[in-house]
Amino acid sequence: MAAEAERFADLVRLSPGACLLVSGGVVEAVNTETVEITGIPEERLVGIPLTELLLPELEPAWHDGVRRAQMGGLTPTVTRVRTRLGATLEPVELSLRHLGEDRLIVGLRGTAAEHHYSALAGAELTHDPITGLANRHHLLALLHHRITSADRNPLALVGLWVDELPKMAGVRGDRAAERVVREVGQRIQARLRSPDVLGRFDDSGFLALLTSEAPPSQLTEIAERLRGEVAFPVEVDNGLASFTASVAVASVTTRRVSIQKALSQLEAAAARAAQGGNRTEILDI
Image 1 (cartoon, rainbow, N blue to C red):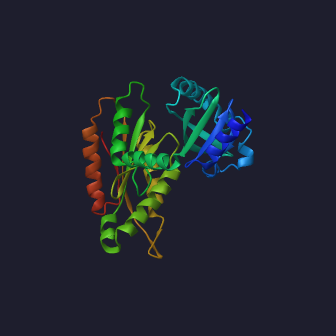
Image 2: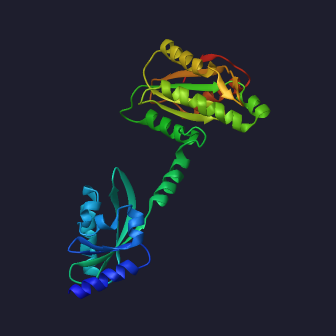
Image 3: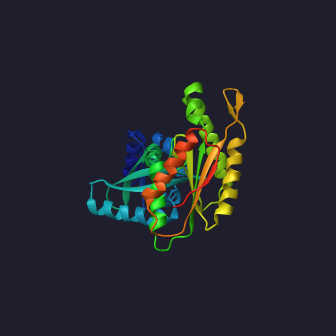
């Protein structure tokens, strides 16, 4: 038995790709690539129960994978788990191959890059790549949900546009305009509460969905505070640029609100802002 165990250990050490030998749930041998993926030295891996590397909530998945691997004989059984590497979590796919009795060859494949790019792809569907805020499509979906939800909270809308930003983009270029939009978005976001949602409505405008039943007078005060964030100079091309802003505010007090009506009024406010509006408007939605 000792000779057989050593033979398996040599097989693991010479195998391409990260893998380790597990017997009775304890790691008996690992190869170099396993050390590279996990970041854990070989001397710390060998001799420990493999479950020590797993998140506690994922142990049932591991045991289920072992059971299925044993039932499947030499047919590999794959289950996804994550290793615990200090304070970080590295997603890893483990493939389990049963070698008889309670011995397993466990292959490891790091999937951190896949998770990263998958998250990026998902974010592209809902978030603006320049500001990191919710994009127009996602904003309107959230607005529709909040308006039509049976137990919805009071809702107010604040649309804010940086006046004449399209003209600046034509003179200084898109990168300068993007810097302004990014900076203004960060400033507005810092003024909002955690339940509120801010997104990029169009090239030069933002829309905030506020959980609020504030009357128009209070909404106007909010609008003026946000206008002040835009008026504060922004560094552009090694200099400072100042802007005015146009703001449109509205309270949504009924579930019979038309999304199309709200959208058309916001679009009209955006058109006035593009002409250098520098105003605050109360919309009747």
